[in-house]
Length: 238
View (spheres, rainbow, N blue to C red):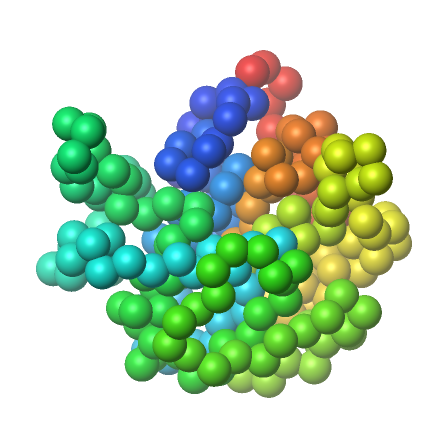
């Protein structure tokens, strides 16, 4: 079940520019960070013409700069392979290449490029990072889930970062904020939404740097998948 679109590179740091794996099963994508999410949405957007987008994450991921957008590969963008997409970048002043699509700006670039093809926007975050600069969106709080997923109407891209379930504890370390029951409920609700066709594409990111490391992120993922009903695990090596 499922295909490795980017083979597992190991339990390495992601930072903003590295992708350690990308796995797909039908219209569900799992990755270590959301750098590749925009690419994963393209097939559904091309098929449907217009969709809604729901972003759930500790961070907005919507940083936008004109410098980045000036290097956007508009020509045939929707037909790029994942390798071509990840390789997009431009030379900087330090004689190196700045990757175009990063974990903090991919959504900002998506908003700029595709906002006319997105009917409604919804966000559930911890208020971290830069919010989108040119759209109006509905804002959700943790206690509205998972029931809010079942109330969605229309067709949606659903972008979930597991770091939403984590926060910084009193000892300064990242820790889980929510129970297994709560996270498993997300999985059940999203499985139903995918089955019903309400969620056309689901992208899931572990974000280990923001979710108590690989151990914490993988543990939360398995609880979520218990509810969702997809069999996936990261290889032992690495």
